[in-house]
Image (cartoon, rainbow, N blue to C red; front, side, top):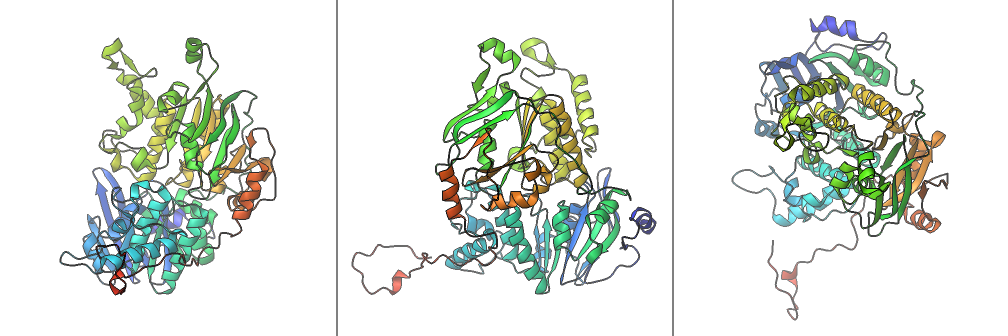
Length: 594
């Protein structure tokens, strides 16, 4: 049955093979079936892989690829079928770990109140003893984070103080510390920028060359094409084909994922930003500073614009958009927004300052976070409640009866059904917990929640993290419709291809402030990437952004190194001293040894 579907759905001349015809190799899954209630996540999947290769598992949201990864790693038991890894069938994460399998899951799973080194060594020891002394752990933690993150990270830093990208490095480092024979990476690069992803790929290739099998689950098609030796494509819970070598192209992958032989790639679609920008300024910043060492940010956002924001991980762009949305307080300066008609009538002022989240909400600013686990979903609530919860209370509430607040369920049901349909969210029963959805569908619910509030300015902080290419195209279409209907959008992303044909301007951040602004024909991945690394061929002197010349001179002097940071040397100013071997006891501080 699967074989027939493989042949029917594969694009012509793509050379796609079927896993169903033959199951073998060092690692294989045979006739795997897994259901969650009425939803069949896996419906007779056949999968095979070999050691010494990087094997991608790709497909749309809800196709079962993350479920397959969890089955291989022993997290989920199969309802039917067989898993074999070097002749073993792990039935739990402990058994998988003993078999040499390490998995980095889609969600960034860390203990927020634990230190970096404690998070790295979670699950490392046996019940009866420790494999490494405390000092060895700290030194090894510093070494692996330096190698992966490209910068020194204090092993004693509390994890909650780190950025999302650095937290992702902790989960990845945890897997690499185990020297795995099989490494499974489920959307592990979703929270990483371009530079960080290249370091991860270099580490993956080195591990592959040592003979390990590496499985990568990702929605980033461009990354998949660069890194994969083979790719298994899934759709609706079944495997629909395998591509290898030169067959792994964007067009072949999209054709198998969608079943459409004539689908166009992003490069074939010559899109241009919508003609929606007006002269009316709806948001601006005055002498805004988001870093102590950063420069003042002055910019104007006209109505109808889609403004792109990017930068290498941890360069202040996240602080910037959160300050605009009223979530984080800036160091200094003001965020000024044009008030809604109701507020303007009440205050007799056209503009007001945004000092907190309530001010932003009153002024019609909506916000979508890419960190759905920490800032997005309510895990103990249903899919339905997660989407419509902003409509329970406030001036947009769908209630009646004054302060009693009788909820108008018919209106809420209509809004829910409309958003589910237009964003193509695979929900199952709407009363299920939102955690029952795949990560991509959870992210769609967060985007739908923002649209339900009918914002005038929509701020999206990496909203496409973890959603498939089809959902991304739908999101871009909805953003175009949103600005054509009078809205304005700010779109932060680390995937540079997303800006092409969508954004009117792109702001590139370095060192906590705007380093460069790109417009029109200058918006392409290569020029933006140059700006991200501090090397730019253009100087934009537009009225909407201002960065002083002194700022650019100082930045260019500090940014001589390019992004080839694969070989990072240990800081020379760090020294470990064993005071127990010191003979001179005078003026010595007593310390506790570890």
